Image (cartoon, rainbow, N blue to C red; front, side, top):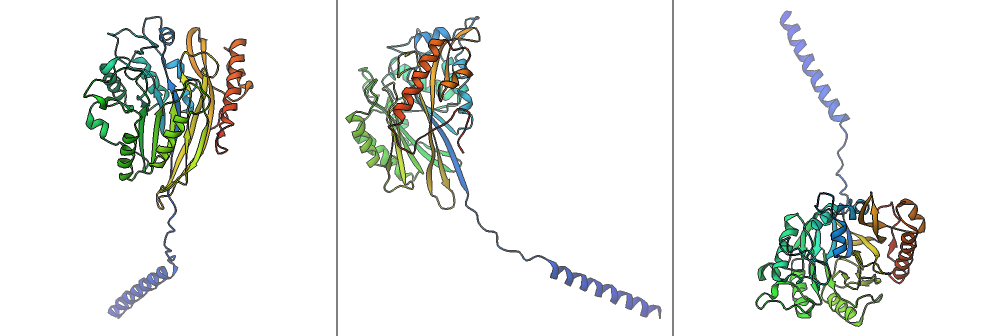
Length: 393
């Protein structure tokens, strides 16, 4: 009898296990295949024009202990760069070191602390191909490259060797591959040492075509070209600018950004062929970003903002949020010290945010706002005004 009870108990236990397993199988939810969602990434970029350092700027940067500090120049504007993946601009000066006398125009030699301030502001790519690249000769070109790299930034347009010049750099950010090229119209008549032509990329159509051909073979998502060209203080592009832009578009550039006129010029969009993008744009001149050029049209300008959006599943690319942020360069007392400061602007009411402005400052700032808006009205309808205090999606 005991044996029967044990057998029955074992049978009952086994049956319960089967029932339990069957019940779990019945109640288990049906697994449906996951729907593959598009993976979209954005690279946010800000571009500025000429970054200059005149003698007065050096004097204003001196502190009580005799050191130099240019960071106050960018203290207010830097927050608008904080969310950017790339902040790019034309570095129109050289860094030949303290053993050579610091100087402004016409032969620039800027203290290294200015580079520290640009790093602090958020810059990570600096164009060095411009008409002042050889202000301190070959030594100045090479030391400038060295000091930029020492601070974790990248320079484009001047090079250490022929191999360095011929290499096409691919910048990979979040899976978006960018190629950026840079060229200058001139070296202000300074002769490039024979055998050292690699030191700077100049505007030569055969070189541009060759570089763009090599760039396209690397299958980038986007090719951006920087030009240092145009007529100083002209508000419209010259025939030469348009000719070079058309040539560059034809041979594969998606975006063209430029400076040198020291004033803003319009932004235009254009259709693209044989590209993943449906359209690109050209900014003929972004004017000055910082300098001691205090006259109308050169004492301020606009920061150009845009994002490159890529669908990693479809490989489709689009340029979004093309916008501009006006600014004016203040020169005067800031925290009881002489200083320059790049001030973001939209309209005259913004002056209330800057109580240190004199009536003369406010008048000049308002004139700058009006001029920037007037020039940018001639740009593509896709270019939007970025209101101060807002950011792009």
